[in-house]
Figure: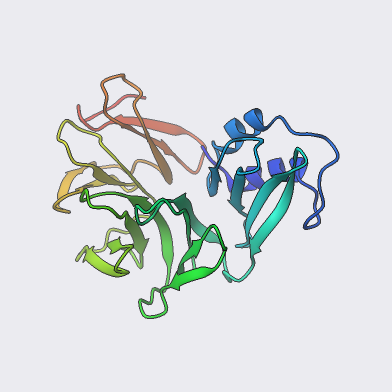
Length: 255
């Protein structure tokens, strides 16, 4: 599973501590990309080792760092130091379906922000849409239109946020008390499912509860087809570092 602390350690081993200072040893960027892609609160765009490559990560202090390649080495390109608390999500994605990459990040103190990756300008912040706490957020195209939706866990509720109109499309009425969310197809119907770490699964089209377990999936979860049936299985990490794998389609715990 992904760990922010390990990201900081791995990057510290590859990137000089002071901003803008290059490492003295060239990096195997293919290996770097494969490794960094496994961690939580990281993102990558471009081709490893090429000028268009960018590596994003957030540290435990709530700073977002962006590195680029210069002369075969990673150098600091840009940083966000104004989140005010630790980040709870970091996504770099074509949010509006126009070919332009956006950085979406959230923080535990209730902030949701969208930056343009080309200019690193802040495009939007939830100044009118206040939350006390944002536990996690991810993005997915739930309704098949051009833009992506932001699936947001804030103040113990689940929100579906229209990224283009920047408004709430839907919110749960009952508190979910979930802290982590993943989106994917975990059964044999065509639409995506919204999987919460507390064991509740929402239909990604009508937003009704489709499935619920009597135990949580874990503190953090990822969806991966472990059985080869074409549907995502839920892999959950627990505080004691044990893992649980659950096959939602067959309704059984695998491991």
